[in-house]
Each structure stands twice: as structure tokens, then as C-alpha cells.
Image 1 (cartoon, rainbow over the protein chains, first blue to last red):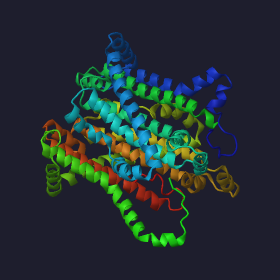
Image 2 (image 1 turned 90 degrees about the vertical axis):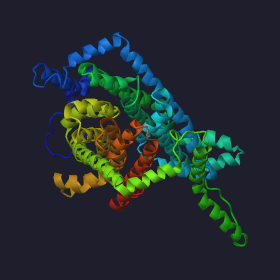
Image 3 (image 1 turned 45 degrees about the vertical axis):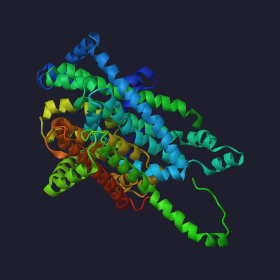
Length: 270
Length: 278
């Protein structure tokens, strides 16, 4: 949406107007600030306005990124991290949406599961990192279970709220047509809760990356977070920045891919 | 799901004895799962199948909690954690709302900041913690700034969305009544966007707490997370479990406090009660 114009009289020319209708020009104008920042970074470090020990030059960071990709370190650790975050999140989505739907459609389930969900929901999930290390050690399992537990509740709560918002007339009509309970849940309540479940999964996606990086920074022997910690302790700052930016871009790309998927899944809503 | 049942008044009156019993059952039901979990925990530790290291007994954890409360360690650690969390959160709130307003009102600011915010929003900001340690050292400045950065994008996004969603009729009416820019901003735009801005703050504060606890675990320096990590290094599992309970209490308090404040601040708004998770 365009910014709200409240000043009367002549406005300064807007950046969008400068770009005109050319789609390429629009993309260039939109992302020009990022290019500007990158140039500023390079200029500040090259002119030794900022010491290379504080901020390595961007070109140096890019060079070590290519080196880390070429020697396979970044890819191997990246795959480890993606495996952890993917499996943990997948489990959370399956179990969480099922729990939320059942909580909403059965008073008994809600009475038994609801209090536990509401009790643990506001807890900062990073507090579980030490217990996961005590129980499951430094490997994959401790990260997967942490991400599963941390993402479970946002998904469950959004599924619960979405299912509660389902149109009662639809449920009654389905029931009067003789639909069974599992049919009502699967074919009426689930589709109408889907928008809210998907919004909850987006929050869970962001949470999963936070938990992944945190737990790998604190206690791990592989993964991108571990790499960041190692490189930082070793003082290899250009490689550390390359890894940090890789993790940040992974989070960004995952979110964008998810938004595209969400748009496809919700096409029927118009 | 509410089941519609038409009960004639006489039957309802006759069944009232059973009704009272049934209501009593429903009000006890929420306590059953936590109670069962506690019983299972106690049985597991008594049976000896689970070592006390993996799962300390309830008594040991309770004793640890009582000791923390008595010695003032809990208050000290919780106060330190909350102090840093709220410092970072306050910076994020002031800067985030300011940047959001600027972006909503100035096209050039919008052009410059929009790609930065939309790229920065979904990034796991915690990955920058080692960079912040490099820049700001090992003390509170680092923790507060990583918290501020983590919460900032949530606040900017919520503020911008709130301001852009303000009813056009409200703005036009104020303008046609001759409201100057400043009054338009402070008396129309910001109050109208406040519910959405506040929702953003309600997401940002728990995020700030998560980041603060991770930062403490990584950097030490007391606080609830720091104490837990120290206990974990010493393989002192009762302390770790007591730490989880303490963090839970603080997290619950923070979320419930924000919901309480929302009900007081936004009394005039129909969504004063949402989000209703606590």
C-alpha cells in the first residue's frame, strides 16, 4: 500500500514514479537501498574507516564464502542444520495441528490437553536447551526435539483458534447430512482452520531457525551455528561473517518460499 | 464445539444434582493432566529406572527452588534477566514505532527502509550474536543490543501495518475539519493503529526474552539463562530443572502482564482481550 499522503501541495517525486512502468527498473529501484548499504560497507572498510578486525570488507567475506562452499564445509554443515530444522518443524506441524484440531472439536481433549498447552505456551523455549543437552547429548536428537517442542505450541494454538472459528452452520449441515466425526474434522473444520494454521506455521518457521542457531551455538559439534561459534573463537572473521550471512539468508529464503506455498494453498479463498 | 441441546426446564431442574456433579468434574479436569504428569515423574524417579542425573526427583527440584527463593538468587537472576530484556525491548519499541511512523509518512524513507525491513524481518537475528560480541564486548551492551535488534523488526512491521490500515474516512474527516499534521498523527493515526502496534509488542517481548536467555547461556553473566548453563556445565540437574521452572514463571508473568496492560490500555477497543492465550 502506498504511504498515506497528508501534505497538501507538491510532493517530492516518489521513488516508484522515478522507476516508471519498466519491471526491471522497478526491481532495481526497490532493492537499490541494499546495494547502497553493501557499497557503503565496502567503502568504509576499504578506506580503513572501520578496522578489518571489527568488520571485514564485503569482498573478503564473499571470497571466503566461495572458499567455504568449494571446500564443502558450508554445504555439509548447512545440510546438517537443514535436516534438524526440517525434521523438527515437520513433526511439530503434524502433531501440533492434530492436537489443536482435536482440542477444538472435543471438550474432553481440550480439558486434558488445553491446560498443558496454555501453561507451556508463554515459556521462552530456549530454556529447554540445557535439558535437551542433558538428555540427548550434543547430536541431532537434542536439536530436533528442541525445535519440535518449541514449534509445537504455536502450531497447536493457531489450529485451535482456527478450528474454533469454523462456521457452525457448515458443521451443522455436514452433521445433518450424516457426516461422521472424523469426516467433519477432516473435511469441514480442517479446511476452514487452514488459513490460521498456515499463519501459525509461519511463526513456527521463524522460531525454528532461532532455536536451531541458538542450540548449535551453545552445544553442538556440527551445523552452521557451530561453525559460526568456531570461526568466531578462532578469529576468522571474514569466514564467520560469511556463515552468519548464509544463516540469515537461509531464514529469509525459507520464509519467502513458505509465503509462496501459503499463497498456493490458499488460492481457493480468492 | 458447543452441542445444541434443548432441555425442557423441568428435566433440567430434576437433573440438577447430576448437573452439579458433572460441572464439578469439568472444573477438576484441567488439573488432571498436570497431576498425572507429576505422579509419573515421581514414580519414574522412585523406580530407579531413570537415573537422578537424567531426571531429579520432584523433592530435589522443589528444595532447589526453595533455596533459590530463600537466598535471593532467584530474585537477583530474574531481575537481571528482566532488566536486560526490558532495556532491549524499550529501545526496540521507541525506535521501531518511530521508524514505522517515518516509513508510513515519508516515501523516501519507505523506499530506503522497506527492502531492509522485509529482508531483516524473517532472518534469525540471533545468528548475529557472535558479531555483536565482537563489536560490543562481553557485557550487557551486547545482550541489550541483540535483544533490541531481534525485537525491532517485529515492532516496525506491526507499526507500519497498523498505520497503513487506519480507516481513510477517519483521516479525511480530521483533515476536512482542519487538523494540522501533528494533531493528525498524534490524535488520529497513532491511536487508531495502537491495537495492532500493541499486538506487535506482545509478540516482540517474548522474543526478547528468548534471545536474552540464549545470550546469557552463551556469554554468562548471571541471569536465569546464565545460571542454568552453569548448572548444566556442572552436571547439576536439579538446578537445571529448577531453572526451567523459574524461566517458566518469569515467561508466564511477562506474557500475562502484557495481556493485563492491553486490557487496561485498550479498553475502548473491541479486541482489547486478544490474543487470548493467557
